[in-house]
Length: 404
Image: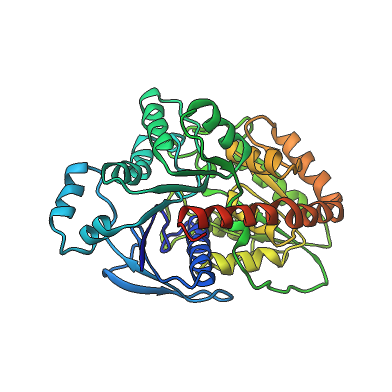
């Protein structure tokens, strides 16, 4: 039986995009080993389950996924060594007995865009793998950018030390080729969330159903609350203009769909922003507050029922694209451009860093008017590049796991 660690892959997290990556990665691993008739044991270091031990993840439309919960890796290598010494702990046994380590980096956190502490949290598994001589693979994720030189050097060391590196977009691939030349086992793949299953929710055909995903993080100006991501226009005003525009169309029902949610108000909670906007509009029957989705499978099913979608959470827009819904991703970092423009050659993107409020609104209006054309483009990409990259990824993971 092979022992596998999957790191930086939360399954109990308000960020439904991060969870989508986690459960899809788990599903892909399970599929590979089942088809090879090989047994495996999967450990999650970031599952946030109260008790260590064997667990199961069950979501509508997915097979049951089994895994072992264990403690998250400490940030300090001395603390990791203590875990090894205490080999009776699940964490100690896991590190000592691991055959393979996979890391998905929460999708886009192997960078310094979210600060030094987030990067260190992500990079710790790479350092641990190198220290104990374990083969490790960076699953499809955004790699970079790294503006801080100290962080960049640490990142390059981790990239070059990996057994296999999977970039999820062209810009990440180019970054590795240019900055980590010692890493020869690098390929461009695509975000694994494209392969997450879903059950489409059917809505009334009496109106055109438009979904908007509002990023609470952008709404509040980023973690620094001072336009941290350098948007050209006022994000709150852009959102209000989009809402006003779609509510001015008599045949449209507009759905406010959160993708990072929680029970309390905080800077990341999309649902709280949606609720406030919905309340401000006096319970307008054509403005719908989407229910708080308990799993990423649920929220993807809701998004799949839309006739048109726009959003600033990347995995909300991936949910739309991968379910065939015409979508305008609202980009605040290069991860959007790298995936949609470069990899998918899908140019219907509103770049919040370079476009004014008027330009964003015009881009969305144009895409909405051409939504049938967009559906054809999306269908072609899903049956072309997305399916092709899936096969390549699975074949390469079989090589990594030595199952060929």
